[in-house]
Image (tube, rainbow, N blue to C red; front, side, top):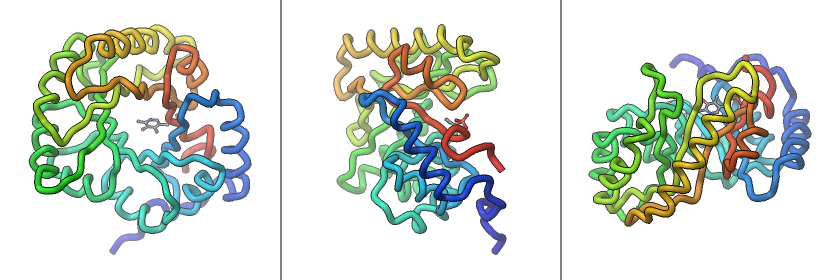
Length: 232
Ligand SMILES: *Cc1c(COP(=O)(O)O)cnc(C)c1O
């Protein structure tokens, strides 16, 4: 078996990561949840972030989460934040507590069929393609309400909010209009009160623009580089 790719040279020692995470947590307002985006990071690095008080972990690939999570026994909530292929849905349910990147009805129906065999209800966020970028995942903003109405037919999926990855900003301010539009959508959908859908989590903002995201109403920010240093 090939060595897992997280076994690479580390940029920061676990103790440094822990200190860095503690410092960031002090700067983030209490109502905002910090999720550690841990792609390319080792279980040891993830455990350092958890030791600092971060209890939400985001991985981009099912296989990475499957190989890392057994080595991270600490209690934490694991989120799928990458594109989820339908043929990985079953394994995704084995390892993830939340899916933040739901953007297709076919994937939703596949998850529903798998979940219907048990008791569990899966919390999901709907990913919105807020920059309307053709190559990117996510539901177009104008289609989100209808998409969520369709999801309300699926009793084992529980919509808890929205997630977005705006176009890569050159300057943090570049993200502000996208975050603002997300917040507006989030509030409109909350007012609409679609059965089975709650608007509680607005997941937006990464290392480059998290402060702007918080100003514009993010309730969850997803940080990688800022917590762990540059990716190896
Ligand atoms: C990598 C990643 C992040 C964190 O990115 P940084 O710029 O390193 O903070 C956040 N969200 C998603 C979906 C990611 O893939």
